[in-house]
Image 1 (spheres, rainbow, N blue to C red):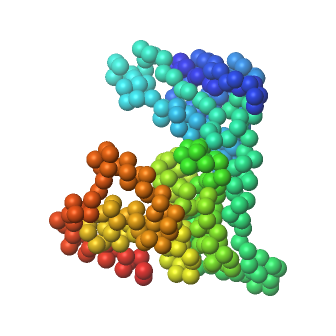
Image 2 (cartoon, rainbow, N blue to C red):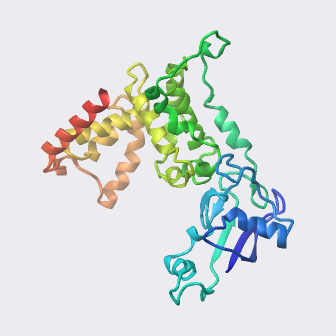
Length: 343
């Protein structure tokens, strides 16, 4: 059947991008997006540029945006991007609505990944991606890396702790969809933090304490906006946000670390919810931004905000706050969760 493929073209880093549309004969149930790009390149336009290598969801080379979401072109079947009505019409069988050209020509929109500069067409410059990965030092650092007469064995349970993060193929899909990377070019990205957890969880590594302190700084885990985009697009189920959350839990559990503002934010939130069932905003700003009146600059920064809230009638006055009616159940639930995490 015939499909329309709209490809974003860009001749160089500095040129203005344009879109070019191709019509391609395809079997949406067996052809991948990479197959379609090959058809265009081999049969219609040899100037189209994109990366690909293994074609088996191993190398991660063919990362790109397809109909507004990043993924691997070799993994995505064309049929994944069209509606149920279209699939019904083209799925085969004896039904009269099947095995015929649909009444409309479905369209694929293929674009380069986001948050990285374009070199040409669908090829992006991955330099910053690799530089950010190097910032977490994603290698096991231990004397066991030296040549030894014996192996350094891991139990299945020890390996399971890092298996999900170890599956990362560094395709860049998560980084392309990362909201934090879009607004903060110093944020290392979900790919780097997934690899950071992979090393941190490895019992062979001898720098865990140092790593936890590093990841507690700016531009690491606390800069994540928790939008879940990275989990949604990961082609190999690394679930980067889950790995970031595990690093955060390790930071929060380390009593030797000085309490940063993000840690204070988390601890205060838990404290207030456990106390009243939800957050008393009149206390929250004082405790977090003002650090319980210890940070005078923080307190001063709240004055303009408080004044604007008064003018808008949105000031959360302490005498207006009422604890949740379900406070007993909330306290019981939170105690159970916190006790389970501490084990």
